[in-house]
Image 1 (cartoon, rainbow, N blue to C red):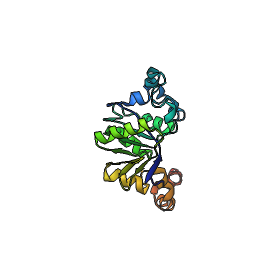
Image 2 (spheres, rainbow, N blue to C red):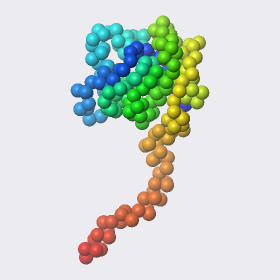
Image 3 (cartoon, rainbow, N blue to C red):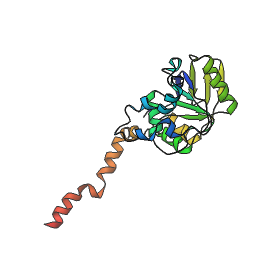
Image 4 (cartoon, rainbow, N blue to C red):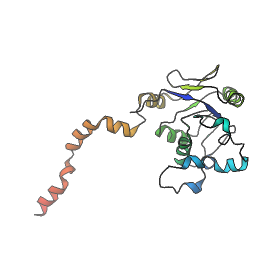
Length: 204
């Protein structure tokens, strides 16, 4: 199982409240069979309108992996494609004022922590990243702190999601692999495992 205790890298500021999932990944891209390639389409309409000035297009933020946002980020429809698009672009963690509940859950399901901080702290983080895009940034999920250069911010997350991330239990596939022997034992006791032979015996 993948334990997520720290995310380290650089940050990218995205200013604005109520940025919904249709802006993160427009509905016309939901017909994809897999999530591969969605990263290129993240914020595509906003980026087109911004004509190269959107943070996802600016050269100083290429390779950044921690997204710093404002209030009610990820509101709107419940599409899981939104966190997938951010993940495929390279985002590994989000720090914001608040997150829509379903978006938060969809991020947790793929191991992307979403932590919150006070609005003034978020604005200061965004200012720091605007002035010094290459400042090293770390989200520490055990200490519940964000470090950006010399600036430090306390962040919050529910105890349940925090524990899921730091212990690796968010990773459902990893749990299955990790408990394969117990699963085999349980499966061997299921009465319907031999259902086919029982039907054959009954019919004869």
